[in-house]
Amino acid sequence: MNEGAPVTERVLPGGVATGIGSLPGVDVDEAVRRVFGELPDFPHLPELPARGPGAELVGRGAALLVDLPVQLYAGRWQTASKKGVDLRRSIDFLERDRDTLTDVVSDHDGFFKVSAAGPWTLSAALQRRTGGAMLRDRGAVADLTDSLAEGLARYVDDVSARLPRARVVLQLDEPSLVAVLTGGIPTESGFSRYPAVERSVVREHLSRIIATVGVPVVVHCCAQAVPVTLLHEAGAEGVALDMSLLDLDSPTSMDPLGELLDGGFTLFAGAAETRPEQDEPTGRGVADVVETAWRRWGLEPDRRRDQVVVTPACGMSDLTWPRARATMAACVEAAHRIRD
Image (cartoon, rainbow, N blue to C red):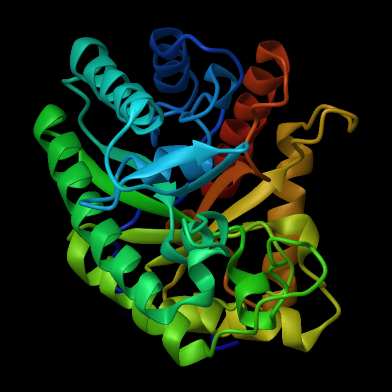
C-alpha cells in the first residue's frame, strides 16, 4: 500500500469504539444509559430483541417502511393489506426507543449511530402474501427499496431533531447480502435457492438508500467475502465486519479492503468476540486483532486513529449484561491503544 496516500475528509469518527446494535434485556432506558456510559465517544441506539416480535432485525426494519404494511404469519413476516397489531407493536417499540433518547440524552454532542435492516436483508426475509420472498420479484424489491429509503430518511430526520447537537450516522444491517449475491437464500420450502442477484442491481438499490438518507452510511455484514468494493461504489463511507472472518493470507479477501482503506474508507473492526462460549475479550487482545490486519494491509500505523472504529464482532443480545459491558470496555480500551 502507499503509505503516503492522503486520507480523505472525515465524515465518520476514528480511534473510538461503538456497538453493533443489539444488547440483552428488555429495558430500553437502562440500555440507553449503559451505552452512553460505556461508549461515550460514539454511542448508538441499542436494539433489544428479547422484547419479542417487532423488536428484532426484520420487524424493526418493517416498522420503517412507508405505505408497505406487514404482519406476522406462521412466525414469519409477510406483506399485508393494512396495518395490524404486529406492525403497530413494531412501530411502538421504535417510538419508545426514540422517546428515551429525548428523555435521557437529548444534549448529546458528538457522533451518534442508529441502525436498520437494509433492503436486501428485508427483501430476503419478508414474504409476499402470494408466496415466496419479496426477493423473487424485482418489482417488489424496487417498491421495498423506495419505501425503506423514505422511511429511513424520516427516521434519521426525527433522531436528528431529538438530538440537535449530534452528528447522526446510519448503519445498514445486511447479514443476507452475500447470500443474495451468491444465490444462497433458500426458498420457502427450503429445497432450493433463489437465483443470485446481479452486483449492479444490488449496488443500485443500496445507492438509492444511501443517497436518500442524507447522513454518512456504514454497511454491516457478518459474513465471509463481504463485497466491500460494491459497498463503496454504492456510496457507503465505511464497512462493519467480523474480523475473525477475514482470511489474512488471501489476497482476494484482504486486498480490496486494503485498497479502500488506503483511499480513506473507514473500517468498523468487529474485533471483540461476542459468542457466549468464547473467553471474555481483553483490550489488548482486541487491539492486536486490528493491528495484525493493519500490518497485513501495509498501511501506515498512524492512520488507524482516523479510519478504525472498534466494535464487537456482532450483536450482543445473547450475552449477559456483565459480559456485554466487559466487551464494550474491551473495545474502548482497544480504541485507546490504537489512538494513542
